[in-house]
Image (cartoon, rainbow, N blue to C red; front, top):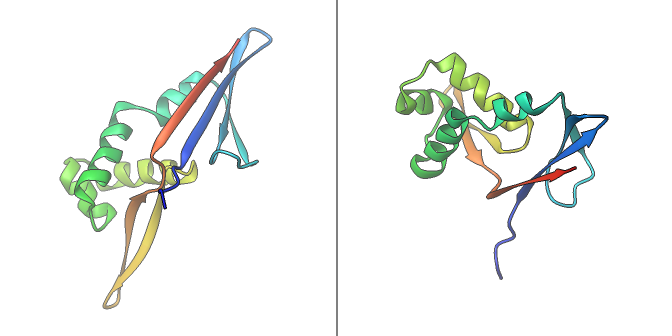
Length: 119
């Protein structure tokens, strides 16, 4: 059986001379997020976030800390980026315990992004 793809739908709509953005969690899902404008979308889809997603996909780090080390970035900023991407459904954080410690392993849950602009 073929693997079902998970697509992130982003719709940009012209409303009264300004663009507003509707962001659906997955195709067919009724839950939507409102963005304040294109700058919020640009922040979400920045080159640094694309690099972060690429590293998660290719290197499969075991924790956010390991991801920050691979990216050679500050743990706090990587953690903030991860939380934003998780909030909008690009990835999940899987809790894993090692002894008394718990770590969160980032896992990508989408395989495509579709952006539609309606004017």
